[in-house]
Amino acid sequence: MGVSINQLKFDNANTINDQFCTIQYNDYESITSAIRDGWKYAGDELWYKTKTSCSEMFLPFITDNCIGNNKLWVTFPNLKDAHFIYENEKDKYLREHSLFDMPNLEDIERMIIDSYPNWLIGESSILIAREKSDGEPLAKLCVRKLVPPGVIDVGYTTMAKHRGNGVGFKLLKLFTKWAFESADIQRIELGIKPQNLSSIKTAMKAGYHFESVRHSRLFNVTNSYSDEHSYVALKVASKREWSLS
Image 1 (cartoon, one colour):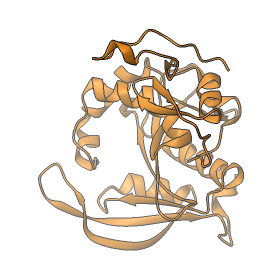
Image 2: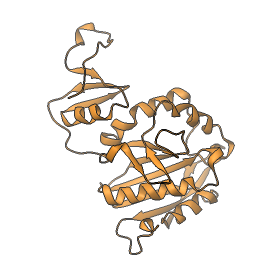
Image 3: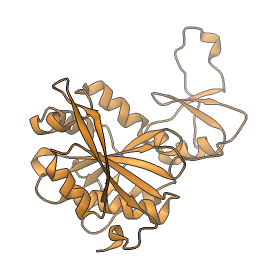
Protein backbone atom coordinates (compact mmCIF):
# COMPACT_ATOMS: atom_id res chain seq x y z
CA MET A 1 0.00 0.00 0.00
CA GLY A 2 3.02 2.24 -0.21
CA VAL A 3 3.67 2.30 3.57
CA SER A 4 7.05 1.03 4.74
CA ILE A 5 7.78 -0.15 8.28
CA ASN A 6 10.72 1.80 9.68
CA GLN A 7 12.88 1.28 12.76
CA LEU A 8 11.33 3.41 15.50
CA LYS A 9 12.73 4.38 18.90
CA PHE A 10 10.52 3.52 21.88
CA ASP A 11 11.31 3.20 25.57
CA ASN A 12 10.56 -0.51 25.17
CA ALA A 13 12.40 -1.82 22.11
CA ASN A 14 10.18 -4.90 22.01
CA THR A 15 7.32 -2.75 20.77
CA ILE A 16 8.97 -2.42 17.35
CA ASN A 17 6.86 -4.61 15.07
CA ASP A 18 4.56 -4.50 12.06
CA GLN A 19 1.91 -2.62 14.05
CA PHE A 20 3.80 0.67 13.72
CA CYS A 21 5.10 2.64 10.79
CA THR A 22 6.22 6.10 9.79
CA ILE A 23 5.00 7.88 6.66
CA GLN A 24 6.56 11.10 5.38
CA TYR A 25 4.14 13.98 5.98
CA ASN A 26 3.84 14.88 2.28
CA ASP A 27 3.46 11.32 0.99
CA TYR A 28 -0.25 11.91 0.43
CA GLU A 29 -0.89 8.69 -1.48
CA SER A 30 0.55 6.49 1.26
CA ILE A 31 -1.26 8.40 4.00
CA THR A 32 -4.54 8.03 2.15
CA SER A 33 -3.95 4.30 1.66
CA ALA A 34 -3.00 3.87 5.31
CA ILE A 35 -6.22 5.52 6.50
CA ARG A 36 -8.32 3.38 4.17
CA ASP A 37 -6.56 0.25 5.47
CA GLY A 38 -7.21 1.01 9.12
CA TRP A 39 -4.04 2.80 10.24
CA LYS A 40 -4.48 5.55 12.86
CA TYR A 41 -2.36 8.65 13.20
CA ALA A 42 -0.39 9.22 16.41
CA GLY A 43 1.34 12.42 15.33
CA ASP A 44 4.84 13.32 14.12
CA GLU A 45 4.53 10.98 11.09
CA LEU A 46 3.90 7.93 13.34
CA TRP A 47 1.06 5.52 12.50
CA TYR A 48 -0.29 2.41 14.22
CA LYS A 49 -2.40 -0.44 12.91
CA THR A 50 -5.98 -1.06 14.04
CA LYS A 51 -8.53 -3.70 13.12
CA THR A 52 -11.09 -1.31 11.69
CA SER A 53 -10.99 0.92 8.64
CA CYS A 54 -11.87 4.61 8.78
CA SER A 55 -15.64 5.09 8.46
CA GLU A 56 -15.81 8.89 8.53
CA MET A 57 -13.63 11.58 7.00
CA PHE A 58 -13.39 15.16 8.25
CA LEU A 59 -12.94 16.56 4.74
CA PRO A 60 -12.72 14.75 1.40
CA PHE A 61 -9.68 14.21 -0.77
CA ILE A 62 -8.63 17.17 -2.91
CA THR A 63 -8.05 16.27 -6.55
CA ASP A 64 -4.31 16.49 -7.27
CA ASN A 65 -3.95 17.87 -3.71
CA CYS A 66 -4.66 21.35 -5.02
CA ILE A 67 -7.63 23.70 -5.28
CA GLY A 68 -6.75 26.12 -8.01
CA ASN A 69 -7.55 28.30 -10.96
CA ASN A 70 -5.43 30.48 -13.20
CA LYS A 71 -5.18 33.13 -10.47
CA LEU A 72 -4.39 31.19 -7.29
CA TRP A 73 -3.25 27.76 -6.10
CA VAL A 74 -4.38 26.41 -2.73
CA THR A 75 -2.34 23.47 -1.47
CA PHE A 76 -1.35 21.66 1.68
CA PRO A 77 1.61 23.26 3.48
CA ASN A 78 5.18 22.02 3.32
CA LEU A 79 8.05 22.53 5.73
CA LYS A 80 9.53 25.24 3.51
CA ASP A 81 6.49 27.34 4.46
CA ALA A 82 7.32 27.24 8.17
CA HIS A 83 9.77 30.14 8.12
CA PHE A 84 7.37 32.38 6.15
CA ILE A 85 4.50 31.61 8.53
CA TYR A 86 6.66 32.13 11.61
CA GLU A 87 8.01 35.49 10.47
CA ASN A 88 4.50 36.63 9.53
CA GLU A 89 3.22 35.75 13.01
CA LYS A 90 5.46 38.52 14.38
CA ASP A 91 3.59 41.15 12.38
CA LYS A 92 2.08 43.85 14.60
CA TYR A 93 -1.24 43.97 12.74
CA LEU A 94 -1.61 40.19 12.90
CA ARG A 95 -0.83 40.07 16.62
CA GLU A 96 -3.42 42.79 17.26
CA HIS A 97 -6.20 40.79 15.61
CA SER A 98 -4.99 37.27 16.36
CA LEU A 99 -7.07 34.95 18.55
CA PHE A 100 -4.04 32.96 19.70
CA ASP A 101 -0.65 33.47 21.29
CA MET A 102 2.45 33.73 19.12
CA PRO A 103 3.45 30.18 18.07
CA ASN A 104 7.08 29.07 18.00
CA LEU A 105 8.74 27.60 14.93
CA GLU A 106 8.47 24.05 16.27
CA ASP A 107 4.70 24.41 16.73
CA ILE A 108 4.35 25.59 13.15
CA GLU A 109 6.44 22.72 11.82
CA ARG A 110 4.32 20.24 13.78
CA MET A 111 1.15 21.83 12.42
CA ILE A 112 2.50 21.41 8.88
CA ILE A 113 3.52 17.78 9.44
CA ASP A 114 0.06 16.97 10.84
CA SER A 115 -1.91 18.96 8.25
CA TYR A 116 -2.78 16.22 5.75
CA PRO A 117 -3.79 13.49 8.26
CA ASN A 118 -5.80 16.09 10.16
CA TRP A 119 -7.49 17.17 6.94
CA LEU A 120 -8.83 13.64 6.45
CA ILE A 121 -9.44 12.38 9.99
CA GLY A 122 -8.64 15.19 12.44
CA GLU A 123 -10.46 18.16 13.91
CA SER A 124 -8.69 21.00 12.09
CA SER A 125 -6.15 21.64 9.36
CA ILE A 126 -4.60 24.35 7.19
CA LEU A 127 -4.14 25.20 3.52
CA ILE A 128 -1.73 27.60 1.85
CA ALA A 129 -2.46 29.97 -1.04
CA ARG A 130 0.28 30.42 -3.64
CA GLU A 131 0.76 32.21 -6.92
CA LYS A 132 1.96 28.91 -8.41
CA SER A 133 1.83 25.36 -7.11
CA ASP A 134 5.37 25.47 -5.69
CA GLY A 135 5.50 29.17 -4.83
CA GLU A 136 5.98 30.83 -1.46
CA PRO A 137 2.96 31.31 0.82
CA LEU A 138 0.70 34.26 0.06
CA ALA A 139 -1.93 33.44 2.69
CA LYS A 140 -2.96 30.73 5.14
CA LEU A 141 -6.45 29.28 5.67
CA CYS A 142 -7.37 27.42 8.86
CA VAL A 143 -10.32 25.00 8.75
CA ARG A 144 -11.97 23.54 11.86
CA LYS A 145 -14.72 20.97 12.36
CA LEU A 146 -17.81 22.08 14.28
CA VAL A 147 -21.00 20.38 15.47
CA PRO A 148 -23.19 19.18 13.77
CA PRO A 149 -21.63 17.40 10.77
CA GLY A 150 -21.43 19.54 7.66
CA VAL A 151 -20.55 22.69 9.60
CA ILE A 152 -17.05 24.16 9.72
CA ASP A 153 -15.41 27.43 10.59
CA VAL A 154 -12.51 29.08 8.85
CA GLY A 155 -9.92 31.74 9.54
CA TYR A 156 -7.49 33.33 7.14
CA THR A 157 -4.26 35.28 7.32
CA THR A 158 -2.59 37.10 4.44
CA MET A 159 1.19 37.38 4.57
CA ALA A 160 2.08 41.00 5.39
CA LYS A 161 3.86 41.80 2.13
CA HIS A 162 0.91 40.52 0.07
CA ARG A 163 -1.86 42.48 1.82
CA GLY A 164 -3.96 44.77 -0.30
CA ASN A 165 -3.78 42.53 -3.37
CA GLY A 166 -7.05 40.65 -2.83
CA VAL A 167 -5.32 37.39 -1.89
CA GLY A 168 -7.50 36.79 1.19
CA PHE A 169 -10.69 37.33 -0.80
CA LYS A 170 -9.59 35.00 -3.60
CA LEU A 171 -8.54 32.31 -1.13
CA LEU A 172 -11.74 32.47 0.91
CA LYS A 173 -13.99 32.46 -2.14
CA LEU A 174 -12.08 29.64 -3.85
CA PHE A 175 -12.22 27.45 -0.75
CA THR A 176 -15.88 28.22 -0.07
CA LYS A 177 -16.84 27.27 -3.62
CA TRP A 178 -14.85 24.03 -3.34
CA ALA A 179 -16.36 23.15 0.06
CA PHE A 180 -19.94 23.55 -1.14
CA GLU A 181 -19.42 21.83 -4.48
CA SER A 182 -16.99 19.03 -3.57
CA ALA A 183 -17.49 18.38 0.14
CA ASP A 184 -20.58 17.62 2.20
CA ILE A 185 -20.48 21.07 3.79
CA GLN A 186 -23.68 23.02 4.40
CA ARG A 187 -22.49 25.97 6.49
CA ILE A 188 -19.20 27.82 6.95
CA GLU A 189 -18.73 30.19 9.87
CA LEU A 190 -16.21 32.98 10.26
CA GLY A 191 -15.69 34.89 13.52
CA ILE A 192 -14.16 38.37 13.25
CA LYS A 193 -13.37 41.08 15.77
CA PRO A 194 -15.49 44.17 14.94
CA GLN A 195 -12.43 46.41 14.68
CA ASN A 196 -10.89 44.17 12.00
CA LEU A 197 -12.48 46.07 9.14
CA SER A 198 -10.31 44.59 6.39
CA SER A 199 -11.32 41.02 7.31
CA ILE A 200 -14.98 42.03 7.44
CA LYS A 201 -14.66 43.54 3.96
CA THR A 202 -12.97 40.35 2.71
CA ALA A 203 -15.68 38.11 4.13
CA MET A 204 -18.52 40.12 2.66
CA LYS A 205 -16.83 40.37 -0.73
CA ALA A 206 -16.45 36.57 -0.73
CA GLY A 207 -20.20 36.11 -0.21
CA TYR A 208 -20.44 35.79 3.58
CA HIS A 209 -23.21 37.63 5.38
CA PHE A 210 -23.38 39.05 8.91
CA GLU A 211 -25.45 36.86 11.19
CA SER A 212 -24.93 37.67 14.86
CA VAL A 213 -22.81 39.13 17.66
CA ARG A 214 -21.38 37.13 20.54
CA HIS A 215 -20.29 39.56 23.23
CA SER A 216 -16.89 39.21 24.94
CA ARG A 217 -16.21 36.06 22.92
CA LEU A 218 -12.66 36.64 21.60
CA PHE A 219 -9.50 37.10 23.63
CA ASN A 220 -7.10 39.96 22.92
CA VAL A 221 -3.34 40.12 23.42
CA THR A 222 -4.01 42.97 25.89
CA ASN A 223 -5.73 40.47 28.24
CA SER A 224 -9.12 41.95 27.37
CA TYR A 225 -12.03 40.52 25.38
CA SER A 226 -13.66 41.58 22.11
CA ASP A 227 -17.08 40.85 20.71
CA GLU A 228 -17.20 38.33 17.89
CA HIS A 229 -19.10 39.25 14.74
CA SER A 230 -20.23 36.05 13.07
CA TYR A 231 -20.23 35.93 9.28
CA VAL A 232 -21.70 32.91 7.51
CA ALA A 233 -21.85 31.32 4.06
CA LEU A 234 -24.63 28.80 3.40
CA LYS A 235 -24.79 26.20 0.66
CA VAL A 236 -28.53 26.75 0.31
CA ALA A 237 -28.31 30.55 0.26
CA SER A 238 -30.78 31.89 -2.27
CA LYS A 239 -28.32 34.26 -3.93
CA ARG A 240 -25.30 31.94 -3.65
CA GLU A 241 -22.92 34.88 -3.59
CA TRP A 242 -19.97 32.53 -3.10
CA SER A 243 -20.49 31.01 -6.55
CA LEU A 244 -20.47 34.28 -8.47
CA SER A 245 -17.37 35.18 -10.45
